[in-house]
Image (tube, rainbow, N blue to C red; front, side, top):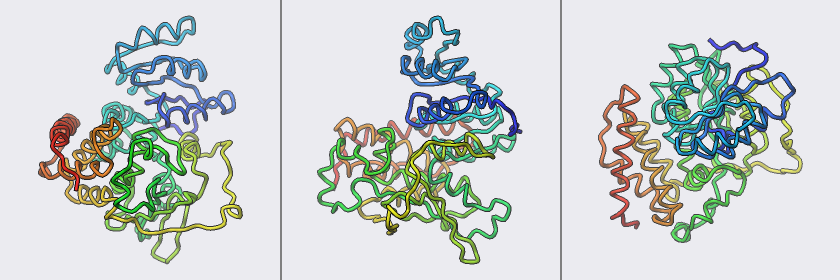
Length: 394
């Protein structure tokens, strides 16, 4: 069981050079001395950025998953006293370290094994990699129950629900509502959406995120994955998890109770805020984020999502209902589709088309181990890449 009172709080950051990792390290670097002690930073292969981050927060250990980046990492850390390691086994060894708090921020299915390892080690694990719970939710939850790990959602929407949810009386919750900004194409007609290029989709009107998450926001697959994640995290059946488009991005999540009360968590569109909530939990820490000025904002608007123009949300709900490996297949096909779109090898509307076509090739088989989940993930990627060569988008 996590020691929630320990000072300094010993932390690991998995995915330290990504958007979530950088925001986490901002908070640690700006915190009062003695509040946090960084045990390990883990990244894929950006050795120079990792070394710079490690020096900034005085990490004890740095690990790159890509072994070919180790010489550059070792050179960049020369004279610092920070240990430099490389390779998949070193990543898992760092993730297994007995720390108090871990940020699971490795993007995509690549973060599955490291996140599961951190959960098995116990402590607090902040889940920013939604694919972890989408692909292997039952395995992660079972591991947390065995180890006593505390899972905290670091996504802005799920963190909002976590803050507004009365966990002492889950039976009083009528429904939860995840909000979506609507992305850059919220008002575009379907015909115009056929012309979308990667540079258009990467210009999010509100949030500043990594490329993959930004594209997922533009297709609303991000919200579909979040519906699946919410079904894993919270004691609410899928049919009582709703989505509302909220362009102002001031309300991040709502919980409605059986007495008609509707509690909303609000804040600026800044990932430092939900990350800080998990980093200091069960306490709170000061964050130099812009404060939400309601008078200046002037209005809050909400609308239902358009499933004709944004079918990814429908596909995600269907995958959740099918269960088994289907959410894993959904996520894998989407990762392939986004990669191809960013490389100008698939049109924007080809993303949901490829995901749907891939899903049609798989039955809802069960996956009881991480190896089975990863096998389904790999097979789905192969199928998606093969289908993409012949895909015709209507």
